[in-house]
Every structure is written in structure tokens, then in C-alpha cells.
Length: 263
Image (cartoon, rainbow, N blue to C red; front, side, top):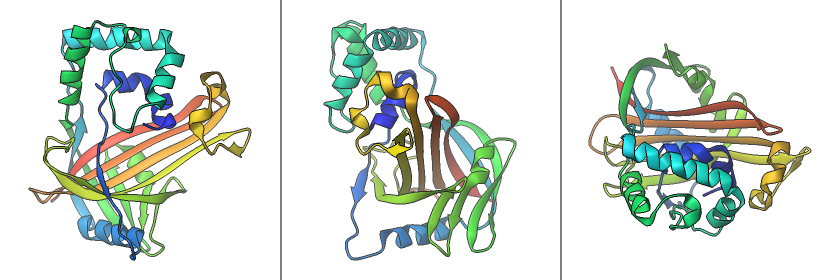
């Protein structure tokens, strides 16, 4: 788990029950992976009108919320320990039980059971349009998700942009039936990402070395975009997450997960 995720999503991490995307990434040697990914997007998202199911994490019950609240308070009180422990874990590995989590071993077992079974499901519906302008795909949402207006797939230059910021191609993703985080089922797709941490205008090559006391001095740009194709339906998965921080102050924060169905 990256420094940015720990820093910007510390409390959301607990309140959303440690939900994260665990993926199989596939390398494509000898080919332009980004070009293939952009071609995939062009095929999967033809221009037109779409119905978009908004995805979210089901709200925990009272007992589960009580456990999460105790953990939040304990993590705040033991912040240095929490960061150090997370740093020593492998990506996707859950934090082991410790009394600094503020709960009993029995409560920890309950927490792990419900947190690891959580999947994103439909919590609402919006309408949106995908349009093709000057060799690019752009989004025109209605009533909700205005941040999607800043997402652009440049088909000519093979770039993904969010509000003029260019994202780098990250990986191909395969989410099988065992690992999918969607109630809608397995999917395959591609991701792009920008992750930049600066202090006093200087890029920090290893953000994990930043101590908590310096976090108020950081400028952070963290954006991730995923486009996927569901295995068992003619639907598409779109995920856009953005966190922009200036000198420790959060300027922009978005976390949108949608299942798109073309009308």
C-alpha cells in the first residue's frame, strides 16, 4: 500500500472496511501496451448515451461501525506505529492484530471477516453521454459526477488526461471471480496513474521516507483511472480517483466507480 493511499485515505480506509483493488497485472513485452489500452477504450466506449450505475460500499451495521470507530481512534493515537507497521507489509497484506488497534482479538476477527467480504454494489443511477471531439473521448454527466468532465482519452496522441494532468500507463488488469471487487462480477481492463509528491518544489523519490510531521509541507497529485469490460454482460467499468493536496491542504478529492450501460 503506497504512502499516498495511507496518508490521504487513512480514515476512509477504516470506514470503508479496508476495501481496495487487488489485481493481476500482466506485462505485454514487445508491444506498445499504452496503445493497446487506448484502442481498448475506443472499442469499449463508443460515443452515445449511457446509463451509469453508481457503485459504493454497503453501510456496515451498528456493531461493525462500533469496531471501526474504535480502530479510528486507536490509529489516531498510535499514528507513528500505524505508518511504520503498514510500511513493513506487502501490497494488499492486511495489518496483523495488535493491541494498538484498540480492539480485542475477537473484534479483530469480526472486522477481518466483514472487511474482506465487502464488494462494490449499485447505490444509485446517473445518466451520461460520451462524445468524440477532435480525436478524443470526453464525458458529459448529468446531475452528478461533474468531475468526469475533466477526464479525456486522447485517441490521437494516446494519452489520458484529467484536468490537463497527463497520466502514465500503469498496467493491464484481470479480476477473476475470486478477486473481483464488484458485485457485477469479473472484469478485465487497463489503468493509468499519476502519483507525485513534492516538498518545496522538489520531487520526493521515496515518499515512504516522509515522516508524519512533514505531511503539512507536501504538495501531492494522485490520480488513477481504470476502464474495464465486464465478463458476463455488455457493460463497462469506469473508476476515477483523484486526490490533490497543496501544503497539506486537500484541494480536490474524487472517488467515482461506475458501471456503464449503453442505451
